[in-house]
Length: 198
Image 1: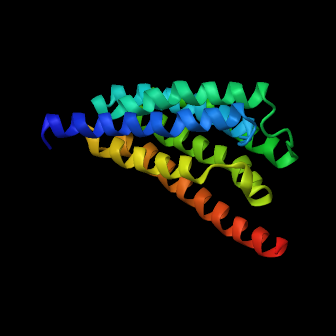
Image 2: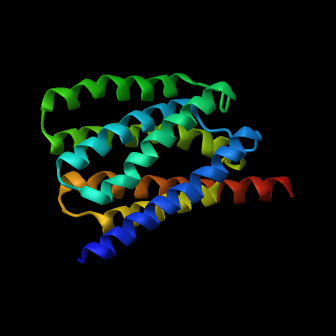
Image 3: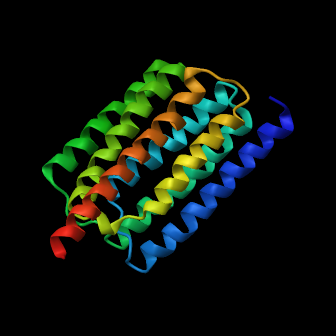
C-alpha cells in the first residue's frame, strides 16, 4: 500500500482515538462513566509495552495510534482511581489483576517482539475481565460510542501498518474483538434491564 495511504490511515486512527478518548475522559470527570480501574491499569501497561514491540517489529506509523492510546489509557487508569470510577472490586477482579501482573515478567524474559506481543495481548484480554463483569451488572456506566470508536481505531491502525505480521497485527485485532464483545454485553444487558424496569 502507498506510503500516503498508510499515513492517512494512521492519522485517521489517531483522530478516532482522540475523538473517542476526549469525551470518555469528560464523562469520567462528570461521573457519568465509571471505568474499572483494574482493567485500565492492565490496558495502560500492556498497550504501552506493545507500542514499543510494534516499533521494534517495524510496524512504523501504524504503531503510533497504539502509542498515543497507551499514554491516554494510563491517564484514564489514574482518573478511574482518583474519581473512584468502579469501587466494587471482587475476588475475581483481583484474580484477573494477579494473572495479568504475574504474566508481565514473561514478556521481559522472551526478548522477542512476537512473544512479547502474544503474552501482552493475552494479558490485555484478561484485562477485559473486570470490565465485562461490571458491564454485565451495570451496563449504563459505560459508553458504547467509545468502544465503537476503539474498534474503528484498531481497524485503521492495522491498515496503517508498514509491515504485517502476527507481531504487528495481533494486538489491535484482539483489542477490536474485545471491544466488540463488550459492546454486545452492554447492548444485551441494557435491553434486559430496560425491559425489566418497564
